[in-house]
Image (cartoon, rainbow, N blue to C red):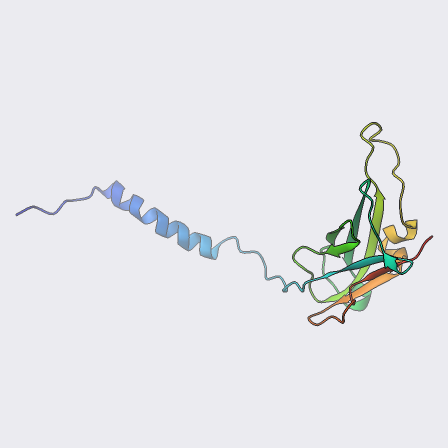
Length: 153
């Protein structure tokens, strides 16, 4: 008859480490609950036509929570405008009203990185306070409900 093998006390403790880590990971360090993000995407138009972004430029949209309309969120959400004038907010946005700013400008000139870049839209669109663009994010947007309509200077 073979005698049962005795495990040394330190080895027994090491076998418990993975279980303890799993318990700690499940209960510690949790982020506060975040409202679910609703998908947000749309077209950026200039004077009623899709805003085609040339290869020498870049475009971004910023969604700023609008506390004046009850959105007390603290996170500004940024999306990239593609070459066809379409944008999408990665991860979406919580329901509520947002003031929107848009920047479309020439890319940095590597020969003159500190030089000014030419904006391809009116300067007012670069600030949420002056852009005049507002969007209400929700679960069932109307078709084109997140489109951003810009006009020439």
